[in-house]
Image (cartoon, rainbow, N blue to C red):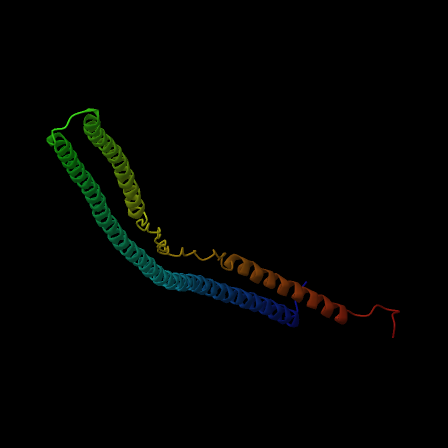
Length: 276
């Protein structure tokens, strides 16, 4: 089949359009691939930049919180030290009260004990003087009776009566001495008990335990997460573009033969007996 110039032109035009369309598609795919690569690179760079900014913001927030906690810790430490000072002042004040109370109790004990001892000594001295005077009176009475030069049972009885009275008085004095000694012991014992009671009436102040607050822990640096991976993929294939162009050429040839077939069908002579 000989191709008509019109068919050849139509086929060439169709093939050219196909090749041009293939070339245009390849250029568009290549540009789209370049745009996607540029967008993927920009997206990765922005993700890394955003991760860095987020890390810095997080670190700043943590540092701000840490400084707030540190300030609160300092305030609590000041309060704890103030409580310790108050407890120390109470302890010192109570120690002074205990010191004065025990000094007063000791001084009072010494004075009272000395007064009890002096009273006991004075009573013993009074008894000794009274006994001595009684003995002198008894000797004086017996000597006076004996100096009269009289004799008889009545005189002996009077002398013996003086001696008996002197013995009775000495016995009473010894009994009184024993009573005074026991009274002295009781008085001293009672005074010791009173001294111990006064001595222990005031106790030292026991300071309450004041615990220090827990210091805040310094913040750890924020872990920066890497950006998510992105698929880059391959660029458009030049071979596919060539195949597409070859297909366009074949399509142009096919269009030329198809066009020639239509022309031949139109220009073919009409057989005899055919329609007028």
